[in-house]
Image (cartoon, rainbow, N blue to C red; front, side):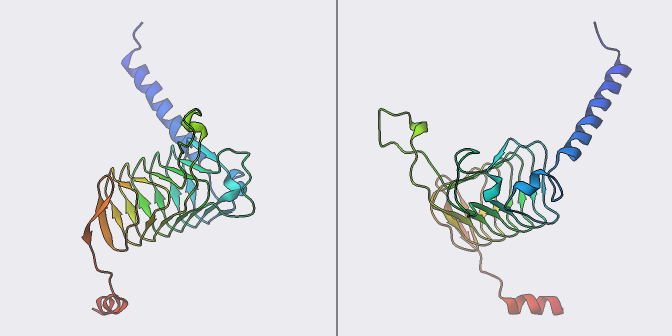
Length: 215
């Protein structure tokens, strides 16, 4: 039986309004019970609803004014029961914007500086699978974790992947779909798989900034 158009519109508006309300209620804010599980959860920071996966919060630090988009994965350790001692495994700085569907998966150390923005569906990890034993499923084998660092003010485009052991400098642009397998220096633009520097941008000197502000 066909639903009459006015009723269909009314139901659609009701569902849309309920979903908007649910997204607001489901956000994790500094005063949320879930926020108290984190090692640090800065003022004005929000994790949007819904979350795809989140565990190991006691090893995760979030700075102030940071927004983590919906459907994100944020984890420390291989499982919720993984004990990692009294240390921060994942640190995200102040005023960051982590795009929808992004995964940040830390086993050892992932450090993201202040004012880092990402597009949607970016993946950042410090761990990978090994292949030492051909008789054992690869998913059960782990290579040694290697720390990842992303410098302040950088931008990672849609679908970028950052692999273990990589340091991305400050004010770096990583193009959409790029796979970062090696270090990228400050003030550069990198694209491709593997990501390669295609442009260097000189850092603005403090004296230049002061002179611009005096004009």
